[in-house]
Length: 410
Image (cartoon, rainbow, N blue to C red; front, side):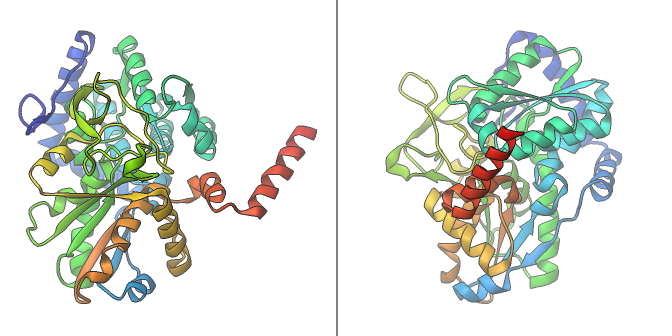
């Protein structure tokens, strides 16, 4: 990142004047922490005692035999506290909030995992917490909403626009502008105005640091490929960052193909001609937008991937051809989830299942003495309503109907 917050042609900090001093203070505090080894050690200690770091790297023996190609390893961020990689960034920003002396945090969330992690951090550090979430995502991720509220967070349902992640971000920024003195915005992904993209990627880099050590321990050499799903880009940057200087490791980001690239009901930014350069929500990147610069509606079976933009860092890596981007449709994602559950007894989140789907298309063509790593960014139990509906499970339908009758009669 240069001094103006750009990664090549992408990034920057397009912010209202009222937030200027807040960003100056945030950047200064973040820079001090980056230069302070004691801060990183405090962070590692927190994540190893309060969370579940290092998370395991699991050899998927059954899937490996099923495809007959390279060995498949899964980085298990689903076993991190709160069930996803989101805690890595949130707990790091929580330590920053303590240093800055602010008493309130706000956040946006799509899949609910970032909101869940932020509510958890706020409870631990004794902070007031407000979470903004699109109405459609509230319906899809009701279990996470329940737990956020039980931990003391206020969950605000956003009913504007497409009622998904981009709209939640807009509302969170409106809140921040009004409450700059006592509030920190815990941005959840590697997007937004600088220094958020770099800062989020730094906290998430713990994933790749661990994975590189683990793959050498178990496999004896670096992997041939590393796969991660791509919404905003935090889990992808988390695992990609460590491998960027490894010339023999190919990095693959898998975007939400929705109903297919030709349907326009998708969230494909870097592997589709539908996206164009633009500036929104404080930064420049590739957005799904019309000719007038209005953001298009997106679609994905995974609530955390239907975002109109993408990390400016990933846009830069795409420009430089350092990361290859593919997409997986909703159907391919459900098939990959089904296979992973039945072969390994592991339940990836719908977001993570995009990475599995992308890997499954290719792994059988690789040599057997190679290995790949799939970043399982989150757990699938948060998606039980969406997954059960997608599988058209009759027993689940009956359970929901019966439970609804029970509540209505009580």
